[in-house]
Image (tube, rainbow, N blue to C red):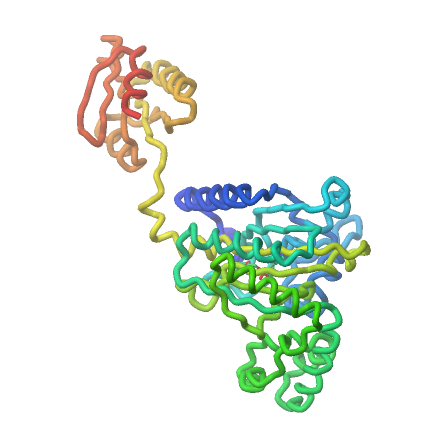
Length: 420
Ligand code: HAM
C-alpha cells in the first residue's frame, strides 16, 4: 500500500471540526484587528527564499523542497509565508493603494525537518504581516494580537520572550564582537559552526551543541550593543507592552532562524507541548523589501503553527465543540427510496444548513438502521418502510428521548424545526 509521505499527515474527518474551529477563531480575531486575508501560491521561485530567509539559515541550507520544473525554473514549496507576502505586496504595488497594509494568511508550509511531536514536514501556519510602518506601537499591536490568540485558545503557561536585533549598524558591529569572542573558543566549534562564525555569527547564539552551552551563556549581549536609535525603538516597544499589560521576558539569545529580522524579535512558548513548545514567533523585517530589489519598507509580522495550537487544546475541545444536529432518513423498502430522497431534499432546502441530513438506502432492517444511526451520532431518524408507504405517513424517532411519532410526509419540516 502506498502511504503518505513521512511528516505530511492526513487530517481525517474526526479532526477537521477542531481545525475549522481554530481557523474560524483566528480569522475572526485577525479581522477584528483590521487584517485582510491574502492567498499566495504554495510554490515560489527558489531565489525568493534564498534572498530573504538567507543562505546560512537551516531552512534554505537543508530544509527546502526544491525542484527544477519542465521549463528549467527552480521552484520551492514555500517554507514560510513572509517572503511570499512581501513579493505579492511589491508585485501588485499594494503600497500605492494604502501606505499601511495589514495582511494575514492561513495555509500549509513545507520544511524537511526531522518529524517529531509538534514538528512536521507539511505543517500549517497562520501569519500576520503589517507592512509600511516603523512605529513601535505597531510592534506592540502585533504582539498583542498573538497574545490574544493564545489566550483565546487558553494555551497554558504562556511565556512571551522578546529581544532586539537592532538596525543594520548594530548587527554589523555586534557580528565583529561575536566573531572575536567565538574565535577564542574555535577549538570547540564543529565544521558547520566554523562556517557560521564567518558568515553569520549571530546564529551561533541559538546553537543546540551542548559543548557550546556555557560558551553561549557567557557570550556578549546584543542589547548592550544597540545603536541609540535601536535602543530607543526597543525601549518604546517594552514601554508599550507594559502599558498594554502584556507580561514578557527579555531574552537576548533570541535570534530567530530566519535572516531577515531586525529590531524586535519575539517568540511565545506554551507549557504542554514538550520540546517543540514555540507556538508562534516573529519580528521586524525592515530590509526584506530591499533584498527583493525594492526600496526599504518597514514591516513586522508573526506566524503561528496550527498543529501546535491543536495539540495543546484538542483534549479539552473534544468535549466542548458543538456540532449540528443530525437526522437520517431511512428507506427500509426498495419502493421507499424516492420518498426518502425527496424528504431529505425538502429538509435540506428548508432548514438553511442548520442541520445535517443524511440518507440510508442500503440497510436491510430496522435494527441495523438504528445501529448505524447511533454510530453516526444521529439525533433523529425518519423511517420509511412498507407500512409508512401504505399509510402515507413517516415514522420519526427522537433518539435521545427515545420517543416515536407518526407524522404526515408534509409535516416533517415543521416537526424538525420545532426540535432545533
Ligand atoms: P518560524 O518561527 O519559522 O517563523 O515559524 C513560526 C511558527 O510556525 C513556529 O513558532 C511554529 O509554531 C510553527 N512551525 C515552524 N516549523 C514547524 C514545523 N516543522 N512543524 C510544525 N510547526 C512549525 C516564520 O515562519 C516567520 N515567517 C514568522 C514571521 C512572520 N516573521 C515575520 N512575519
